[in-house]
Length: 431
Image (cartoon, rainbow, N blue to C red; front, side, top):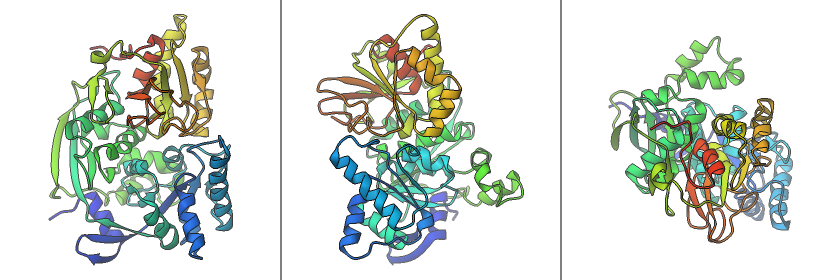
């Protein structure tokens, strides 16, 4: 019997199997940020174990509230900053060099096919786009990972989505993953890995694949994963060109991290996306999804474009494609609109392409890279009763502010809604 990519990664990293369904794996990367890591650090200090298993494999960033908004968040940043210095963690990204972790770390080349990655953050599954097993973990597992470089997981069961057809203009990876979550529900992939495959994935950029994998957890999955291909190699080439004689050689090496044709799956779903249209969430669960056309005219108080889901340059370009026509027609945002490029590099690139200026001409507020608005901590928090169309990943009750409501949408839908002042499809989509 063949193996899935997740099973191959587990087999290659297995350190111990203390129980039939428990696998202790060695870790290639441990990612850390200032919200969840300080608790783990404090406990390690209390246990007289303030050390790390391998400083070169730990990457840390201050990203959830940056710059600090109050004394508490300043203290969290200080704990992480001091810990990184004490333990000689070279890849620590402080204010000014920092960005949203799940955009920054791939951008820095820290994730490779076949890697095992953990972080005290549920959207760590984003990094599975590179053909890695990446999972969010709790404080205890994070502590062990920092100290010993291992983490335990149940034997992976994989649900495969074969995506065929072609996406219509104005339909984006965000719409694809919302449709998948709607199909299987928020518990549909609990304790499983979602494997994305098929011609649609083959033609998708790394940024699009990261969007899919990012929201796999919203269906309950431990991780989302795509098999590495030449698109992966091209994205990583500037980091790996010293390791391989050619891109073809790199592709051949990464080929071992592909699911076998006779691999066994928990479930297999085949889905033609050709008729898919722009979607948005309703209510307070990510599986509550409707076509945007059915929600046209719904009230909005704010639009937010950013996050680890949709704050990359590809996302800003999609929003800019909508904004360009609107600004040319003399329009400005009809509701307050906040844009947060996910990393300094994305910000700089958007600046160079004229996107930041375009957004400012539209009346958008452009902020530094931060996760703040997504979890209702800073830079775009909602007041009670307010409604936001957002490119983020969660629409839980109060997620972006106590009493606030969130409609999850693509960047193009978000930009169009900003000018309309209500939910609406973007002009990029022609039904």
